[in-house]
Amino acid sequence: MRRSLPVLTALFVLVALPAAASSSIAKTKVLKTRGNVVALAADGTRVAALTIGIANACDRVVVWTPAKNALARIATGVDCPNFDGSVDELNGLALANKRVAWIEGVGGNTLELSVRSRTLGANRTVTVSSYAENGYGAGEAPDGDWVGNIAGHGSLLAYNRWHACTAYPATVDPSDYGPHCDQPALGDSQDYTLSEQTLFEVVGRSSVEIASAPDTHAATFDDAASISIVAVDANRIATLAENGEVTLYSPAGDVLQQIAVPDGTFAGTALQGSQLVTLRDGNLELYDVDSGQLVNTIPVAEGSVLRDLHKGLAVYVLDREVHVLRLSDEKSVTFSPPGTGTVDAQIEASGLFYSYNVASGLNRGRVVFVPWAKLVQKLG
Image (tube, rainbow, N blue to C red; front, side, top):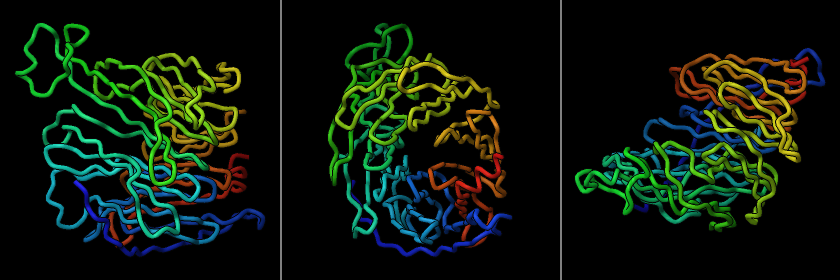
């Protein structure tokens, strides 16, 4: 299902909050958006936000550069007026220098996924992947092709593609259950076979396969595939295997490092410089990338989700609070935004970005920028 992307205009407001006591500390700034902000992706001095629920308009991506008070507004092909399908959603967001990318999902009984990208200053959005179709629309069957796990930084944009099928035990007739694999499940319970697992880099207006992984079986469809992207930094792509191992790839697909992270329940992974941080089983775990060794373990509250890492500052979200934790001394600062709904956060050399939403008004979304110097001042 190919759909044209209408050109939209957006209203936005930039608000400068009071400066810190020291004149050398730059001001915190706030961006107001028409739609609710549901996700952030930052790189350098820019932040991208997914905004949804805009009256009489498609969902859109906005890219904000606080230092220049500049805002780019990009319409997506999702949740547009008069859409008559049963599935219409955005499934990811990435920012890499002047390129922003996201995943659109539209359909009826089936779900059709595509990776879309726009270079700031360009006149049009391009589709950089072939369309991936599966049965996860109204049919609610995951069998088919998928794209996901999009991430970016600097000159690098990457995402995953894979095929899924439902495998039933050899003792049952799979034709009674709908779509299924050619081969049975490994055991006596239904499972899923993940095949054609690939790692793609976005190059120009298309995608190039740079690595692949063997077929795997998963107990649930939500289980991680063996080459799932979890972080991108500089010229490295971090993937997480089903057993917890993290592998770092180059843009050419060469394996740079493998870090033996134990299996567990993961709630985020971040990579920056010589540091890799995972949030596993309720603990922030810091690994040295060069040696692959575990350096430190820091317990955090149950329900925390790791969102980003820069120069030793880890950012995680707990309920509606944004926590910035300095790994070296475990000092932290908490931001508690007002409003309702989704809270997200990213951190770059320029500073901290976090988002929230308010319940009413024309401009319901908020993206806050806290300059790096002010953030360090708050940490003491």
